[in-house]
Image (cartoon, rainbow over all chains, first blue to last red; front, side, top):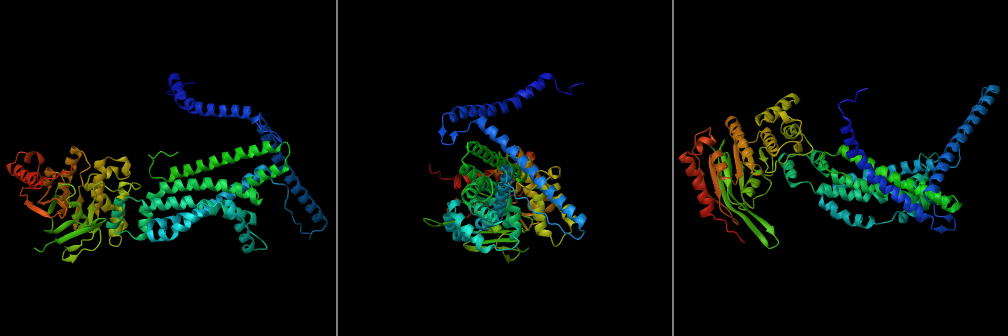
Length: 323
Length: 264
């Protein structure tokens, strides 16, 4: 076997300069945190027992994974039984049309994660669909800006919890359908997320649009670009960096708001999982809540990384340092 | 011959918190087709303002601009501008930057193929075909300015307006671009108004040098006809007594008659 073009020394160099150094400090940080956590947790005693340390949390994690796979097996068996029963009946009576009932088992931790994820993405998506065009409009036209600014400033700091009852009532009153495409709880969570997370995107887009370089505006004037071409070719590209700053802030807020809304409204999702465990009050509860806390943080981190990757892909300025 | 571009008694006032500020007072200048005119003066004398009024980016408070007998209102591609800081769209390649202008000006008169050829032709003029697919942050300052010139030329302007086009470049790059500009000018015979603060550049490139007095209420101080044979060669001219004399005249105007009063 030959080592192509790479001496041992060079390889060592690369390992040392790249992976080792870049991993050493984060690893050190994480280890120090786990140590502190273990030491600190053992000193806090609650009515539900000791505050969960890393070991307990890991145990709860494995038990949640096991619960999930058990639940999946149960579900599979449930459907198998139904299919078998229908097949049996049809063998006796060819005219029999069977109906498959939905499995109504308790949603597992991972089902709740999935629910929360698509709710947050739907709410964030809707918010972006509203905020980006509106932000462009506000940024381009100072009269529209003056008209909308007071409203934006007042609604921006509103907590999701204040919106929630109103959104719940409005959704219940207006979304009446015998065969609903979406569940009401989904819509309530989604609209609450939208209302709370659209503001950073809106404001940053507007600022980005208003801050287009004067020289570029002059170029547009000299070329007599039409309004649409002007917006597409000049305004939007130059607003993209700030737009993404807004989008990333919005997505972060969306994720935080969603968990709170789910807790308060008992809507399916990670928030409900946390609240249910809290109400449950077993000796496992705190450990499970801690698993959820870490999972919420980890997913929030992944969402932000995903936005960063999209930004890197979309941004024309590849030299810009994005973090 | 009828006047191609007539700048007629142009004055401009800007509103400021302390009342209006008169930047230009009654600037009049007639320019013939194919003429290369430089505006020179100390910074803050309003030479860029004159250019912006001709471009239509500012409106004159009094007076006006006639281009081929028609009054100029607002900006337009027939008065293309080469901006000091190239002003290329950073998210477009050199080709796309020129294309944006070409599509805007010729979308009804040229086919796709003709437009492509025209874009390449203009990049060729400024020797930038090799970097057609590069974005502005991938090319040097001089190259960016070349693309900026190509974009302006591609609009086939009646008047080409250049706002200190080489001001931000180092001396060697500037000399290269001046030579390129003279070559292009020989072929296309454009009407050009160029703002500069470089005396050598003004004498080398211009048919006429318009020297402006210091602001406020700046106006045209003197006009110098540069009667040097073209093509001009910077090395040969360096010791040419006529060139030296023209240079001295401009310097005298700038540093004796219109000595900048520095408020320390």
